Image (cartoon, rainbow, N blue to C red; front, side, top):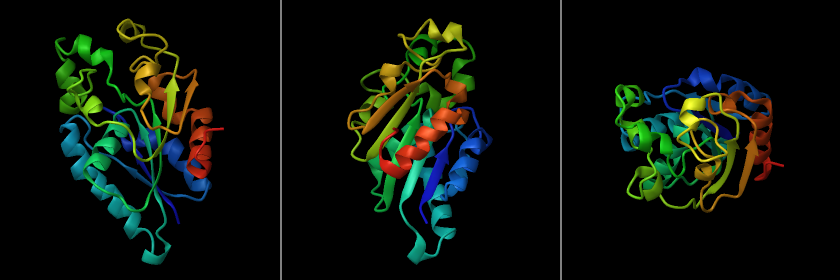
Length: 216
């Protein structure tokens, strides 16, 4: 059976991925919806400490002879954790990766508001690493050498944060900054960042990509 590891975004919990989980389970996937303390540690530590725990759940839930490919579906920061982990480790059974609203080139929101009172407290060490600098984590991770599709939102409900972002954007990340060199597919949908992982169209596109390598 193929396993899908779900990774939520910054300041969210595994509950935010529950709708996605239910659909993927109906599609026949073994799903590991793994929570992690996104505001407590830097990106490197989050990836190397908590992703192995999720991968171990895939292994424990299947007989060795039945353990198939391991896919990832991520929201926001979760996509950067996968990139960090795959930059440091080889995953022989790696399948496909779907990223929803990933700051693959960082977010100008971090660039502009890092100085603001309470910003670093709320977003934690990992959030402060999501700027657009060429020396930042997203830029240093380089292009994808794995099969990945990206879903970007084009609607914002946070008009204040959108002031700091090029259009189109989802209120947290610009569409342009979701793109990743080496990706197989990229699609835009009129959904805001906080709702991408629950949107029916986004979920449908995710299922398509996991099964076929294409959103359509």
